[in-house]
Amino acid sequence: MSGNRQWKGNQTSVTAESNERKPLTQSERKVKKYANNTVVALELPFTIVGAVVVGGLLGYFLDHWLHTKVTFTLILGILGFVAGLREVLRRLG
Image (tube, rainbow, N blue to C red; front, top):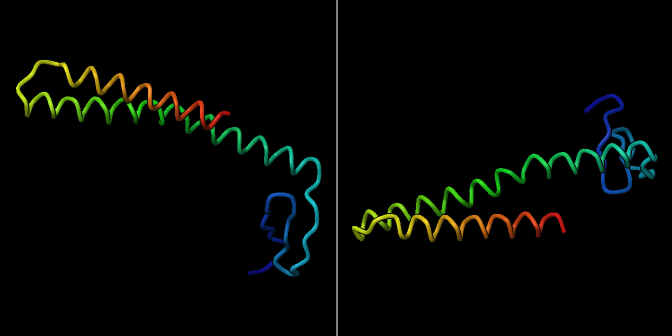
């Protein structure tokens, strides 16, 4: 490793040349908070959609296996939506 490359922790940063920890500056904390919020915002839609798709597919295969109409697809799709929404609210709260 060379140069002034830095690894950032929660409230400190460590340089490659020394193991000294120094507090993050105000701008570094602001950038870190913005990056974390951006990651969460990009992740949340996939959480909801993924839960609905998994529930709907499971319901579809159950309907196909049990020779029912769309009963399990709707029930498990709705349950997937509720589970995805609950997960999103858990992550935001």
